[in-house]
Image (cartoon, rainbow over all chains, first blue to last red; front, side, top):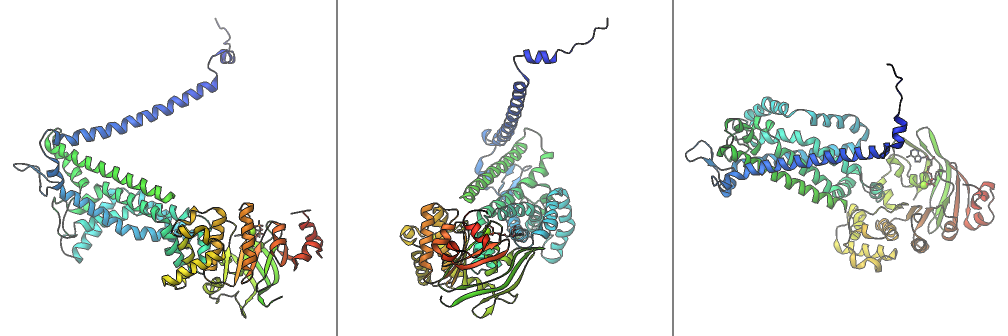
Length: 308
Length: 252
Ligand SMILES: Nc1ncnc2c1ncn2[C@@H]1O[C@H](COP(=O)(O)OP(=O)(O)OP(=O)(O)O)[C@@H](O)[C@H]1O
Ligand SMILES: [Mg+2]
């Protein structure tokens, strides 16, 4: 019963209406399109999900938009419950912009150092060090902030150390890699010959850097800052650990405050799905999403400017 | 021949271990155009760059010998390179206008050197643009981007820019080799015009161009200055065999 197995593969291949290269072509096509379709479906369903939950409080009439955006009182358990998110909007905006203001000069300087002054040392020491910063988990940043920055602020300034400034400092270190790497790329792609042109006119290195190189790369540098702000805006854990989480608009940088992200992580576990409180947290998430779109849009505009 | 603008004595440049030019001694007169010719890689650009100390920017470069300008040897660490480069303008093969307006490109150098007065800057812009025959072409869009100019206009703008700091010497490294024939002709006219005031050293791969624009021509070969003489003599009756081979297109 042992028939020798005959290979009919070459025969079949030749006879097949779909030779190998066509089958491979189709396989590749189907695979890529399937992945893209899945990706688009995923993105849209996330957006739809957040939007539908986040818009629920306004549609059901439990809350109106201006109360959420401009209300200063956050008291979900109160009678009646108050959902004023202005303190969180203020907290998020303040922490991320201050963080960017701190990180930007350091990022620029690091980029200038790595590209213009000591490319060798920069690329072998500074760049890996900064890239390492990008890889540290945010809980570690929060922990360091809690054990180093908060006590430092408490001992040297007024207040308990928790607050906007503590949050901003932690965030500034976290966004430094973003600002630095984008600035470095921008400075690295400067057209050849520009620097020489400036030197040949008798400019010194520093004059060249801030009269020519910085203005020329400004749109790209701003892109780095905006991406940094956007990252800071979305960071939750590390900020939550050092900001104090008081739902008020603080009068100084040294008082406890809260951000959109920190309040979401803090309260989402205590709410029941479908309740007004839970849905309002989704509204906050929707605000974060819209802010992200806004940042992406700004970056796009800046990039178009940079190309000109 | 008029007075000597500057001269080099036994100038050698090393990139690490490699010697790119070997003991070059050359003199350059004021109001004279000197063409440097020679096959690719023979050290023309290297020589040119060492004259305004632009080679300092390259890591691992060593320069030996002397460069005498205005009674001073500028090839030593104590030289004020800012002053030096103000006196020696430079133009490259690829036009490198700054990403700024035409006006800002020209006042860039003067601003470095402390000129703030708006009227004075306006004057400089007009003077330099007239000298480079650009004024009529761009006077209505001085605040427009320099990058919107054509390649030839950009190159003339770069020449105008280097004139703005009032040099007495201009170094040009293949200034027309990326340009079309019409723009090239304009640059050559410009060189003939600028010669009335400046000493111009121009590197070119175009033999006709060297013959047309220069008074004297130096032929470089593998880092040596093989022959340096009146252009007419070099192109009609060179003393050196390899010069003859090169200009008649037998090699290189
Ligand atoms: N930055 C550098 N580092 C190391 N070697 C260099 C450098 N620049 C030039 N060289 C070398 O020095 C020699 C002379 O180069 P140079 O650019 O002066 O030649 P050139 O005559 O201008 O050539 P071309 O006509 O192609 O422009 C070449 O062998 C080149 O490889
Ligand atoms: Mg060259």
